[in-house]
Every structure is written in C-alpha cells, then in structure tokens.
Length: 382
Image 1 (cartoon, rainbow, N blue to C red):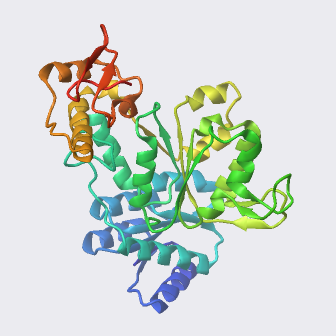
Image 2: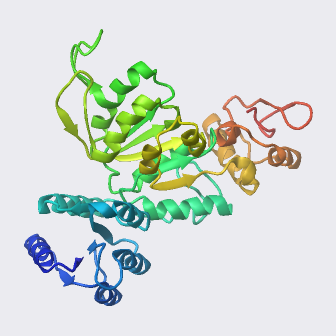
Image 3: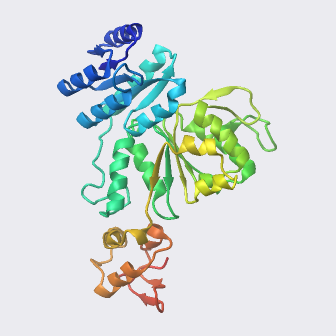
C-alpha cells in the first residue's frame, strides 16, 4: 500500500492502521516522491491526498494509472474540492472520502475493494471486436466506449449513459456492473418511464405498512434491494421534478426514508442512469434539475446509433443470425449480397433492437423502396 499525505499525523495513523491489517505500507508527504515510488514498485492500494505541497493528487493518480491499471486508488479530499475528487474518479480512482473521516470507514472501503478485486477479471472488452454482452462492433465509436468502460467499471463513479432507443444502454449498464468490484452484489433495474408517478417513490424507496391504501405490509424499495451493488435508472429524463428532488438526496447522501416511515435508511449503491433525451435541453426548459444532472453525469457515455457506425452492421447481423440459427436449428450460414446491401443502406431507427432477427424465420422489411419479403437471409422488420 502507498499512502500520500502531507499531514504527519494522518500518515502515521493510516500507516499504523493498515500495517495492523497485515499490509506492507510505504508513506510519503509529497507527490514527486510518490511518483518515484510508483515507478519503482507496484502497489495494490494507494491512498492519495488531493492537496500536496508540490504536484496535485490528480497528477499522482494519473501516474499510478499510467503504470498500473489494477491499483485500487482512494482519494482523500476536503469538502470544498469534491468536484475535483469526482474528476479523480473519472481518471480511475475507486472512491473518495472527505475530511474529516472515520478511519473505520476508510478500512471498510479498502477491504471491500480489495476483496472485490480478487473476484473479478478486468477484460479488455471489445479489443477483439466480440463486444460486451451483446453489444457488437469494431467501429471507432464502439471501441472508444469499450476503452472508457474498462477504465471506469472498477470505480464507484456514477455513470450517465446517453443513447437512442435500442442502442444497448441496459446491456452496457449490466457490463459495467459485472466488471465492477460490486459484481457479486445485486444489479437492480428500474424503468422510470414505465412506473406511474404515484408509485415510483414507493418502488424506489419502499413503504411501510399502512402508508397508503393496499400497503398491507412493509416493502423494501429498489435502492434497499441494490445495497452493496448497482442500480440502473433507465429513462431518467422522464422523472418528474418532485421525484428528481428526492432522488438528488439519495445520490448525494446515500440515504432516504420509506414512504410512510421515519427511519433513515443508508445504502451503499452505485448509480448508473440512462436516457434517450437531451438533458441539457431539458435543464434549459426547467424540466430537469441542474444539480441532479451534474451528480449523475460524473462519467457521461454516449452510445452511437447504428446509422453512425454502419461498419458494424454486418458483424451485428451475423451475430444475430448465428444465435437464432442455432436456437431454431435452421441451416442458415450467411446473407446474400443483396440482403447485406439492403441491411447496410437502411437507417435502422430502432437501432440494434430493431436489427435483432426474430425466431420465425420469415420477415418483412421496409427499406428505401418497396417492402421486401423473404426467408431468413432477408432483412428483418424493425
């Protein structure tokens, strides 16, 4: 373990605590010495203060990441510099704590991170073009997404995924969770647009018995169910201003009360949100809270539509074809030249969801001209 902090008492306390945990500990008071140590040694864990007497903690984190992608980095920061700490998480810090803090809390975070790292494999997702959990592609846009999520998946950074309907936002959220230190904990999904406004608060935060008509028993909410893991808030842009205000508290403080309850419940949850709306425009129109947006968009990721990565269409089509040919026991091994040209010239308004071949073996496809009907080797309906 490496501890970088310019306060002597802090260095001593942290060194003693983690030495008692059986860790080998190096300590330093400045960033340049830290960089020298990083170049000489490989550390499983690094605790880095943001404010150092020479270079910044951000520079130290960059150097750690340049040398070793697997080091678990924890940033220590004053409250006034939380925004910079969030920037550190974008660079690959696992989490940050604000001063003053309880050493026991620091130990919990480090121990959880170390335990999680033993159970995960950081995959170089997409490097061979095979994609991640259903999202396929070799295009520069997709490869850029692969590279980004490989860096941020092991951190606790909140993620906001942008993308049109059908681009694979939920698949990406699942992949981030599976490659995180929370992989063995729950992954809970919530479609904010599919749940009526009157029920959404209860779904997210739970309710007590008797809180409203038909509340015959206490019910835990999705945030409680996701404790220790990740929660995926799909269609976050459809949430009402009133619910946005309640969500903001959970994002900031990781605490809430059940509907009809008075007990404050604390949870440790990573939030991954997604939207197909332009939230910047929604903010300008007063429909989405600015403070909530910036809390959610710590790491923004844009999933490109299929029409902007046409070089991926053939590979995507072949992936679906292989899957469903096997499931339906149909001896289909490829597409005709004409069928592939039709696929690649179509704009795919439904993106990969529309591109997925159905199991029936016969489809109708509206291309640029008249509809074309045919067997499995023809384009699918959107």
